[in-house]
Image 1 (cartoon, rainbow, N blue to C red):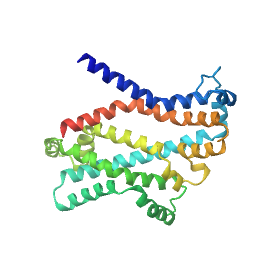
Image 2 (image 1 turned 90 degrees about the vertical axis):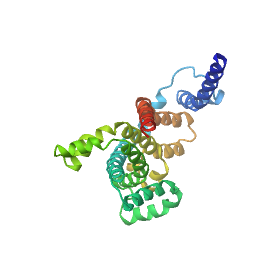
Image 3 (image 1 turned 60 degrees about the vertical axis):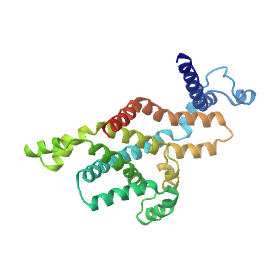
Image 4 (image 1 turned 45 degrees about the vertical axis):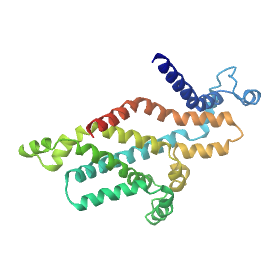
Length: 272
């Protein structure tokens, strides 16, 4: 038994090192000079050249890019949570073929690849002047995220006893009051899961910003990084410094929130 545990541990350790290797290369390259990179690509730098980060900060519009990413990510996630929770609650508590049909439509939206909807979305975006606006891409992210959000919330709410709502109704609480005061606080595990998964996706997404955010002042971190790499493709050290700067916020967020993912999935599994 101990031998089996040792083999599993070694396997997981090797797998972890494999996934961490790209991060190692990125950080290593960001702290070296061009000459050191030429002499030894994977070699340790003789000194930590943090001036690469200073130069990348001054030439990449990093504060503007991170602000755009924050506005779009926070706005989209708030929209997803609000609509998904309300829709999931209505579908879970109402009976009838109409609500089941709506739920099936949400599920169908999950199955449709984005490549099929990209062109119609872009045409709608141009028609309603959503191109190069924060609110336009927030609506698109919200519409895409609501589909999986409703799926999560619907399954979780079905496991919550109706006795909570019946007791609130006896005390004279309205339906909206029951939801916001009693039901929604119980949805903390699944809400945390929805938030984390959507934040990771929206923050790192490249394709939608490339289609809808064509002006410089609206570029997000991944999009600005793409243009920055193109502009400084000959200076890999500077480009990697910006890459590291771009992934620091989301790595910190994930390390802080990963426990909520586990709690949400575990709670859903136990209740379901």
